[in-house]
Structure formats: C-alpha cells, structure tokens
Length: 276
Image (cartoon, rainbow, N blue to C red; front, side):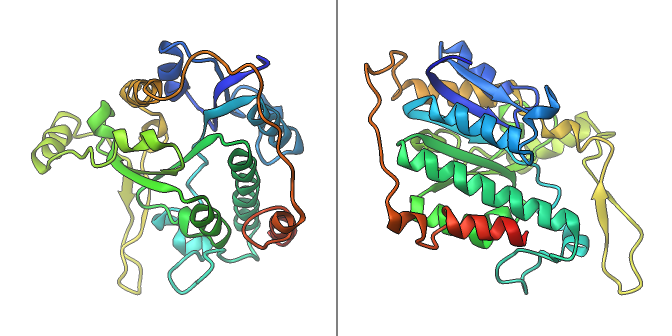
C-alpha cells in the first residue's frame, strides 16, 4: 500500500469507480473480499485494513463505500423486518443476517467518523430502494456530518439498466451527478434494447394479496458501476483536489466528549455492534 493516498474504494467490485480516478492520475486502492477473504469488512482484518487505508488518505481526499444492499432494500422487508413501523430501522434482531448488517452499519460509522476528523471526504452508495440511510446510527452520522445527497440513474452513465441510485456524502463533487436522470422515452428504449434483462422478478401474489418480488438473474451484474460513473467523478474531483500531496498532514486528537457523545461514534457504536 502506498504511504499516501488520494482515495480509497471499499466494496469495490470491478473497480470502475477507482479506475476513473486513476485515469486522472490519482493514487488510491480498492478493497473487496472478492480479492481476498482477509478483506471482508465484517472480519477484524478487513475492518482494520480499511481503517489503515483511510489513515493514509490526504486531507481533502475521498473515501467511497458501496456496502451490500440486500438486507436493506424494499424487496427484503418481509425477512428483515426493516419497515416504516420500525423507527430505528434496525429490523428483526432475532435474525443473524439482520444483526450482521447492523454491525456493518456501525463499522461504517466508525470509518466516517475518522474521515471527518481527518477532513477526508466520503460517500456511500445505495440503490434508491434501500433504507440503509434511515438506520438510526447512520442517520445520526449523516446529520452530524452535514452530508449531502445526490440522486441519479446509472443508465445515464452507460449502465444496461436505468437503476436509480442514491449517493450520500460530504464530497462536494457529488453534485456533478445529481439529477442526471433518464427520460421516460430513454428508459423505454433501454427496455426495448434489452428485453431479456431481469433485475427483479415478481413472484406469485401471496394469500394476503400483496405482490412479492425477488432478485432476477441480472441483479448481481447490475451492481457494477458503468465506466462513465468513474470518469464523471474523477473529473469532478480533479477540479478541487491537487495531485501533489501536502508536505505534512495535520494531526488531530480524540476528545472525550466526542467519544461518548451518542452521536454515532465510539462507545455508542461499540454498544450497537454488541447488540447487533
């Protein structure tokens, strides 16, 4: 790993976001358990790997996370219990998968806290049907950080499907993609060009009369960013982040009030990890 970095991408998959940044000359790394089991964010090794990488990002640099959404999307509400009546959106904590993903959210909040302290920009990506940003812990961190939201269609940047996306973060260049949506006509043309693409699949209607959906055969493939997303954000970042690293990075201290403030950091998050 380089001693100093401009960016880090966690849950990076095909690295299309990182590739766009590298095309502009930026130095960074991509982390995903697809490359090594040790990089699994839910393992101590994976969490510490990301923490070590974030520590090397220059102030003003960018950390991007695209955590798995399967436990937070609308189609999984029946099994996760994450629904509007759950004010904290922590879901049914008797289920192991729900507890695991609550832990994931708390660990993400720790990473974001370090980013904020080091004045490193950050962003999190989720599909528009995800409720992750409403999770009690993450919602507090987003509010405390003054993060902004960008909503756009991946299809606008070259994806095979429209796929509405939400990016939340402190990086001011998120605005370069905000509002980039496909028109109704463009979506219809895309569907006509790929009629066999199946991202979601409707199951038989249940006895209660409610329609049920599940992931289709092309859902996993739709998770990769189109190259246009990386190029767009790399170019936007180039407008404010110089390629030259500063001579010295400023140090920072952890104050007692921040450690126990209950605002999505440290002790509060550790308790959440124990509870799932």
